[in-house]
Image 1 (cartoon, one colour):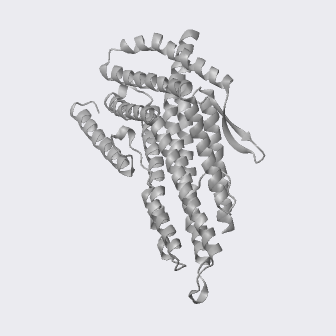
Image 2 (cartoon, one colour):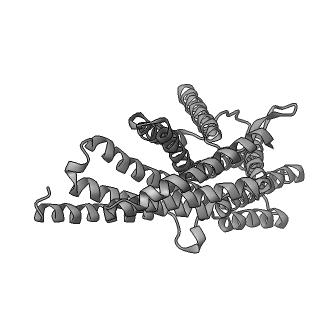
Image 3 (tube, helix red, strand yellow):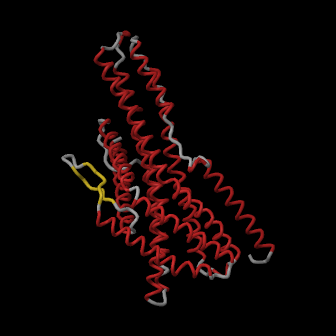
Length: 398
């Protein structure tokens, strides 16, 4: 048991380091323009404004946006191949739209973003204060595995983008390529931020569920007296306070997760659709036009990386949604512990409130993100690959 706890603490600490690395990486790219630092006597993490970082982010974003519009857009429209032109146009449009969304968030919705970040940090502190078990870091084993795969995707994404600069013919071309890379990676950071946000909601639900499953049930069992003697009013009052605190925490998690979803649902949906479409077109190009891509491993790596981004985001949402439903299966109604009507009313309100709290992710109300989306996406892509390969064999291109 002791070794399992040590291993869990180590994994949660590594998850916190991965999140910290991603945070600084997004700051360098000019996507995040606020500062998260310790403040107060208890060294609590707080999100604050940073005007230098904000001006750096805005200038970098606007300059790169202007360079891409002036130099990259005419080059994309001059491409003769229709499939490649469609792919590049879709990539460019999605990147520019996501860049505009980032600018809107940084300029007009800075207060909402900071309020949401501080709400996340406040809920984490509140959840840690509820439990008597001391826990550091972020999440557990599932969160660490998902964050590890996300870190691999980030490193591979950066490597593939920087690889383009090595083949630049001049300094001007290098600067244009660098601006294009900053715009594209910045737009892709939207899907990474969405992944981190929904995974944070899942981690919060998981910690509160662990508290209810272990500590709250133990406290409720301690109210049962041998021989059927009723519990004292003071014990019932303390138990009611714990139930109310659990309900308040569940409500706050659901509220923070919903505000995060509303704030980022449009850019996440745009980049998600662009990812799926780009994966489809790129895989067609790789399968049909083998001679055009001599480095098959690198191109297929990009295809798999696009798959991974979509699947990891869906898995993070699924973790959050499923964790919000776990509490319903704990059978807390088996603890009557008293004949007082007030206690039974409080316990019934607690159970009904938990059944009412259900976190859902529906981008613009179009569809609900769940694990079924992964199966639909994978089955559709496998069917698509089968048709493309059959077409390539019939036309003697494979």
